[in-house]
Structures are given as C-alpha cells and as structure tokens.
Image (cartoon, rainbow, N blue to C red):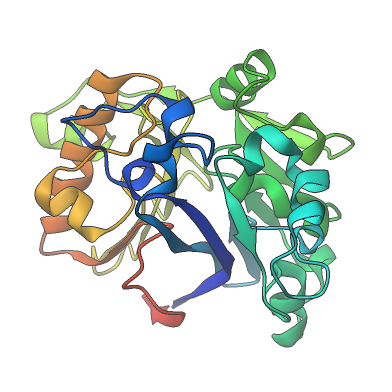
Length: 291
C-alpha cells in the first residue's frame, strides 16, 4: 500500500488571472504584478502544496513549497520575502508560511528526517515550488527534468537560481513513448514523454509542457488494482481548471498548455483515478490518500 500525504506549505497571494487565464484581457506578466491596477485587482490567497509519499521503504517528496525565510516569524513580512525571492518575484507572488508549515517542520512532525528522503521530485522550478529546496538539501536524491533546468538557467527574469544554488540536482531525461496503441500513447501524456522512476509503472513522471517546458506531473499507480492518483502541479490551478478548460495565466507555450490540460482532464475523468490534484486548489485541504 502507498500512503500519500497532501501537505500545504503556506500560501501564495497572486492575481486571480495568474491562476485562471483571463481570455478577454489576456494579461502579460507585468499586468499581473502589484505595479498595475489590473494586477492589484482580485488578488487571492492560494495554498502551496507539497506531497509526501510512503511506499515500501521509500520516502518520496514531490515539490518543496515555500522556505521558512519567506516568513521567519510565521507572519507576512515584506522585506523577508524580497530578500528571499527578489523584488521582481515579490511583485508577482507574495508568500506566507505559518509556524509549523515549512516542509522540514512538517516532516519533523511526522518523525521524518530530511536526510531520510529517498527522492525529492520537483515538478518545475518556479519560486513557490523550489523555494523550500534547501530545507531538504540533504535528501538522498533531488530530481528535476533536464528540460526544466535548462529553461530556468536561460530565463533569469522568471526564475530565482539562488533557490537551488549549492543544491545537488540530479537531472533526468524523459523517454519518448510515441509508439503503440492509441490507449498506450495516451497513457504516456500529452507529448508522449515519461520518466518511470522505478521502471515498474508505479511512479511515472510525465511531461505536461505549456506552463513551463519541463513541467512534470506525477502519476502514482497501484499496479495491482489499476487505481491511481494524479498530481499535476501547475498544469491547471484547480479542479475547475480541467473541468472548464481554464488555462493558467502564465504559459511558455499556449498550444502545449491546452493539450496538457486536455490530457489532465481525460486522465482525471478516468474511472481508475481516485484523486486528481492541482498544487494550488483552494478547495483541497491537507489529507492522506491510501492507494
């Protein structure tokens, strides 16, 4: 049996149109910051999730959430945020981590040392997913797709490289799986690119590009029953994203984002899907899934 802990490592305050694309206005990133009147309207707090999976003797963490440095005293602190994530990112994302909610603090509450983590898998390297990396820097293996790291290293405006500076990142390459039956091809994601963690179909890292080129969804499958859980990070910001086909406000490639969201929708509607979770869904509360 696998046990999936759905954790929330604080919150992020963003323009609602960053989460749910406003097709009429189609705002650019500067319009989504607090510098614009549009960006100051309808701002909302969204949860920042991370997921701990217990499987046999393995401990696997998917995403790391915010670092304690963003809220040293468990409260909203402007200067601390600017120091941690830079001014440019603060203008778009404001964070808050109440006491006890940083990922290392939550692991400690479960009597787990960060050094006990066998794998840390990063869905992508945006600040609210990679900020907490140094809290778990002594994990046995920290993984990110080569596509994502290459994109992040070239895109200094969007990313904050200091968040993984000095961290031993293990990059992986997706396997192209574009052959087989239509059903088999569909299983392998919107672009047919997968990294199978153990090679047995239980933990599949599936490329869902669009929001970023190297964005990774984690599909966790009980291979005896066929039942699975889909963690799709920022492929959409909530269940309503795939139900109503609402894209994220930021997409590196809009066409790919659409195809990825279609795949998330179909995979979520499958009768074998127990839960399908977006990282920032306001309706999701911390809970445990047994698979």
